[in-house]
Length: 327
Image (cartoon, rainbow, N blue to C red; front, side, top):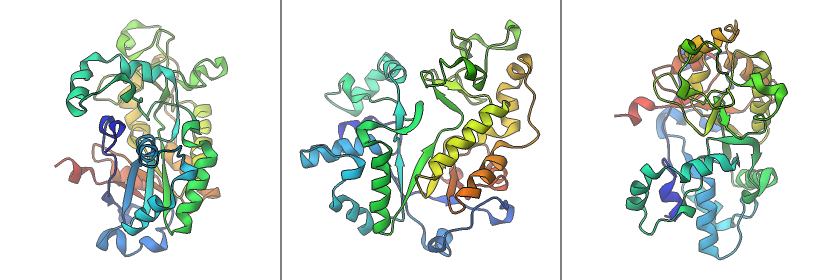
């Protein structure tokens, strides 16, 4: 295991269990791919997670040369095939900015834990969270979007599929929308009424940090405003763009976009700044529009609080088997 892999906050490679509930399946949901029928609930369908940057770091060390997604050695892809992998979830390919990395490297309270996990640890081993995305283009160090396309092409030649991430709830604090005055209302903003918000949830420029209803703010992120129709359209376009690059999409914290969860998390602040809840669910609308162009794209939701059925109704194919994981 490489140095970077040991410091990634989560499981690097995972043969994962998924939940599917056809009893509540929405008409918007894509049909189950033929190769998955009869397997997802019996012998299993292997989704293999790879954290992109640590993996390529490890391959560069192994082969002593530059490796991008487009030039991963054939032997490495064949190994995935030999392990009976069906789909590769390539985690953490999208562009990041300096703000999140600087924040991560300044979190001194975490350093002792890092040192225990990785003897000889140095600051360079902290590579930044892949969930504070600045723009939806693959990192140049990984080979860019062209590298992703080549990687997918080579997987397909072996009969494997590709899954990519979409992180819809928030963006990096230094994303390309941060300084665009025309897009300032893409973010939840601080109300003038000081009794309508918690100061710690907001940045000095008035944008809210991303969060869920039960935890504190995530300081490397900026919270998107899903009661803004323009933001919804922009996010639908991004979902559709990602669908053009892969066979499946894993949606980070998908339940945070359900209207009642937005209301629970941000209703007070949104009402205080003049926004009202939309009449339809974002996922229902966005998935239908995406599937008009890419009908076979599989969607897997990260979901908590037993909201799986809600997301199946809105068009998702699978959710994490969170009950099993949390035992």
